[in-house]
Length: 329
Length: 136
Image 1 (cartoon, rainbow over the protein chains, first blue to last red):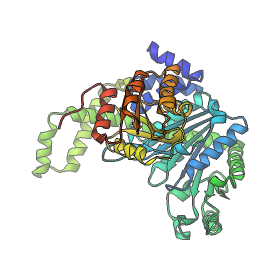
Image 2 (cartoon, one colour):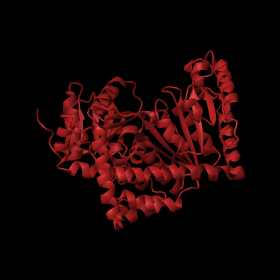
Image 3 (cartoon, one colour):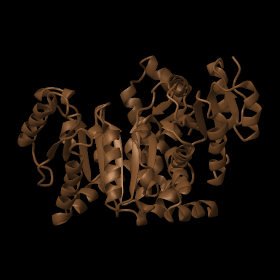
Image 4 (cartoon, one colour):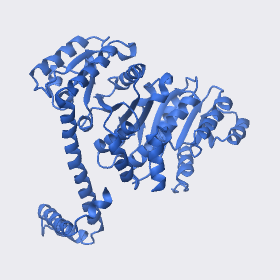
């Protein structure tokens, strides 16, 4: 424990290596993770959390690079968690967001970490949230989470940030695409990037038309920007757009409300995780499982009844020994 | 949970020959590693990345003749930052008589252009996990 506490102390004082190690331990689900997160939590909450998502190749990393620069020029320290997919077959990953980042001038103020989506225990949202909380507690004033929006991962990020920026390109599709569920529903700010290409204005109009009909979240009319990040066009406006949303959230306790709602889902998910792990451990140790499988296979019983029985047995066992989840905290 | 090896891969300095390093990166990914490809970077930036990414391995690729100057500098800077456990591997076109010099300066292994991919994978696994690769 002494060793863990020293690590936490050094990280909170801003030591990059210690911050990096802590993120690894938490990501890996190490035994020290619980203690680290307990110690970190009270120190967190001061940062502005920004999520950036969108289809592959839209220019998210390049936009992040430009935003890092603008935040630093304006005197803010920045932490970034960049999430790329991992192979469902080998578990391996090639994390390439860092290649876009050029930031020698401000390197002390920036901490950039690549993360593989499949690595995480208990879902992307947990690890990304825990890692960004570490960056927050260790003094980063702005925490950016970047993820490819192709499945549900962008929804996880929506549960962990104050502002969601959705980055699309002119070729991202016609007005039907903008009406589809998921990605387009979660944006507080939209960037139509690569706007030097044909069709950018049309894309922006489609998004605006869709937004006009969408229900408002927290009285906010999402803003749409045209950017060409590699040419450094429209990025200043995008940067101001982020702060506009943040200022909007700071009014009338909206930020507090948004974060409390997220905290509620996070708490429920954490309990889910603990229960799930405990149940899975028990099932893996259950010698009768093979016999039960035989019964299901030969149709002596069915999988629905069997599953319910196992869950009922577990519930009866769990209620008999309160407090056994303490070891997880 | 299973230990995943984290590898920071870089082109050393100014060197446009990126095909090899991307090919190796891809194979390491397929071998189940987490590969962080950072493109063309100088030793200071490579070490900065290794710190923030908590890398187990740094792989540098060079075909431009800067291996004797910039290569050992990566090792020195890692040591200076308290990252001496990070293993540095080098790949590219390296004259054979330079390999002992590089190893003497702390480069863990040097792989030439004709190295079989499995040798690179096994070399990294053995160095980090401390076990011999399974045979067959």
